[in-house]
Image (cartoon, rainbow, N blue to C red; front, side, top):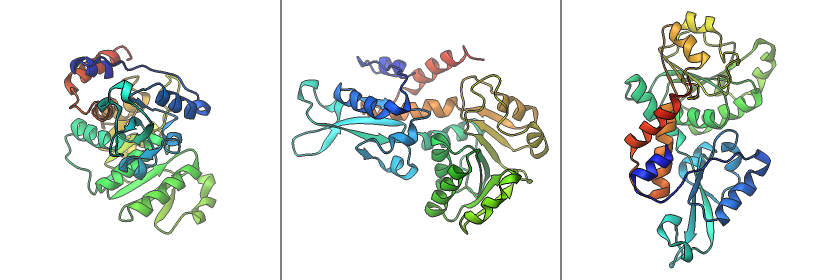
Length: 300
């Protein structure tokens, strides 16, 4: 996708994939800076970690506490920092990393495109997961003005931390934490702006989003039961996973009567915005979409 974008812009650049263990993430970012990389993308499980490893954060990354895009910058005459694309390689001096987050806006754009809905103000949303992508998703939806946000995650401490951040930044959003019955003792440990329910919502929600990793493997269990999907039938179901194209969650949601979509649109638009940050040019979305779809069609 990114290489198709570079080709369309006639840039002599290459986008490469590297497997980096979380313990080596700081060294990898520093190595890329030293070697003169224009920038980086980061995915699971690096987004939260990277927020504490870059030199500066842009507004979105600071607000969401997660980084999915890094732009390397250098200082020029006058003292201001500019992206490396603006400076010939032989003139690059000190360089720094600027952490950005393009996930949130990409999600909203994708949701609107997939479900023909202009905004989510006042909507009720059930979010499964509390990792880096889920965090950006939750905070961006809260910024969008959703009316009620249900949060569910296997690691309760993480979901309570996320709820506290949302309550602090967006106190107008009604929050509900969904916990299994054996964890009712956590009820006393959450703040007054957040309530705790045992199990999942009993009423219909407008949108359910899977932001967990369940679905990446064929034998993964569903992130929520098929019975709940059939009985509550959310209007819309969205899975941040895009490979495979149809996860078990999306299949169950469609069988339950939901309009459903995978995360390919979010992937496209976060990548397009990252390309714009690196190049300073408008992303050739058509070329990028065609390359992405050609690749994803290999994974049914």
